[in-house]
Image (cartoon, rainbow, N blue to C red; front, side, top):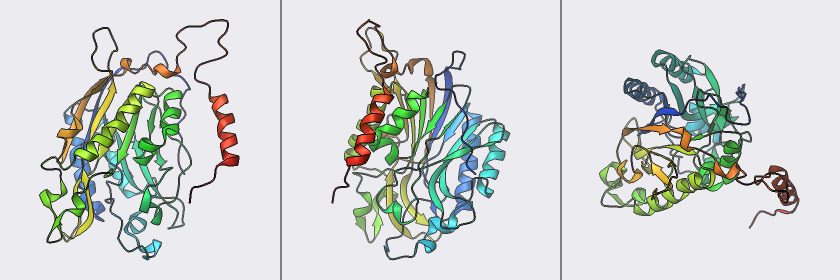
Amino acid sequence: MNKQVAVKSKTETGCQDNLRVAAVNFQPVWGNKEANLEQMILQTRTAADNGAQLIVFPEMCLTGYAIESEDSLERSARMQIRSAETLDGTSAQRMAEIAKEKSIYIIYGYPEKIGSDRLNVYNSAVALSPQGNILGSYRKIHPFDREVLWAKTGSTPFLFDSPWGPIGISICYDTYNYPELVRYYAAKGARILLNPTATTWAYYSASELIDGQPQNDGKPYNGNNAAWLNRFKARIEAITVQNGVFLVSADLVGAERNAKGAFMGTCFPGGTCVVGPTNDQKGTLHYIDYCGTDPALATDTQIVYSNLNLANAKRNSFTNYIKTDIQEGNLYAPALYAKWYKDLEKSYVLPE
């Protein structure tokens, strides 16, 4: 059972503004939950000891992301299906204990099994509270490319309440290519969005092999992440510019190998970062700011720390600056958009 945490539609006055977050550039051992869980526990403790109040791990960090190359492989035989856990499974319970021990929010990606059907599995991210409670999970609504060989499609946004107001979770492709979800979270009052990701689009390290192995352990070198970085930054910066909110993005990094050291065919560029709005005062040269690091510098396993002032997250697109007698309603008009989408629902045809 997924527990949707009740949140209010508007950010309340009295919410805390200062938040120290940690986001992890994580290199998993493919298919080895035990090894990955130990890494996650160590990194959570380290982050908490360095003052972090919330930590975000990447998409599918519990198991590794790589999808076996055999398209004909039965779904039931795929690693993600065999490794899937329920929302209150062994790994979540262990991490919830750490969340309580260190008094920190934890968000991480994993394959989530719903109910007794072992094939009812989603690409999910679980949220754990400092009290050791499992707050619920977000199930990826837009699986990317070959993920559909194992992951079912989610359908429900997920926010959880916190001292800083409601916090929304989206995963990778949801965040970059489907602005409807991010917009929904911001309209619900979220000032901070969490993006567990496993993004590689325009990163070609996995195809530049020597004797079947990626160079530099699949991590960026000699600027080979430049094309990816250009695409990545454009997409996450747009979220801040359009919605006036902070985005915490945690990515996998390096080559994925199994416990025997075999390369599983996927490399990740890292780039874990936090991006958000500046105070937008006179003399400000940049409307956006990378809080803690430039993603171009996050090219190895590491924890990125950011001290956020959420008072800068003004969610400007949802504000009517001037009220007049000729202005009908609010500038942000979900009822109007709902009419458009209802029409689109009737007429949209999937391209061949």
